[in-house]
Length: 267
Image (tube, rainbow, N blue to C red):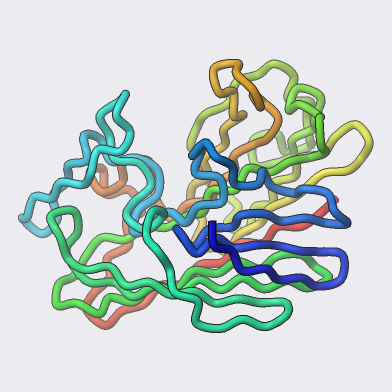
């Protein structure tokens, strides 16, 4: 893993150039998100030019059929787009920020060329994480984006003991043994999600008004090692399988751009 490290005050983070994703985020040495490990769970990945799944990897756009790689073999779907397994270039680094870039080209999976940049910056408020995309090709194309952090409340504390506060558990509620793996429609475009351990420590995530949906998953992992020790939170611009349903899909015309940000901090 080739990483870029940044820090500011009590916060530190590392970014993986393979996939351009968030490899770690710490506050006073405490993990706020699950660090990337040997097992690929999409922890910290960038999800573009679509998040979540495309059923059978197939969709049509402007009368043309596309076939995305089937990387969720058990279900026969495409999962999380086209950029999480590419090598990104480091454009700029400072002590507290890093910018990485990537270009993808039109293919059997996608209609146009896209130029991406992702900017990570730390401050006393935590992490600001922004993805910018520009259509540099000749064709209009569908677009959606998200990120895939697994929030952690405190080392060794399972979700079962944690309080989740979000758009569904508005006043905060102990998760207990409840299984969650669902995409919720957001009626508050600046929703904030908090995961808090009994000690009061925890982490939070917020996103901008582009987030119209949010996938929440209790990370059960079939009861194996690390099960329910973290919470996947993915604020998305569009629905699950949106390239087929067209629910909240963004159309990027040639020359058009889109930006979205997320923030993560400590409780």
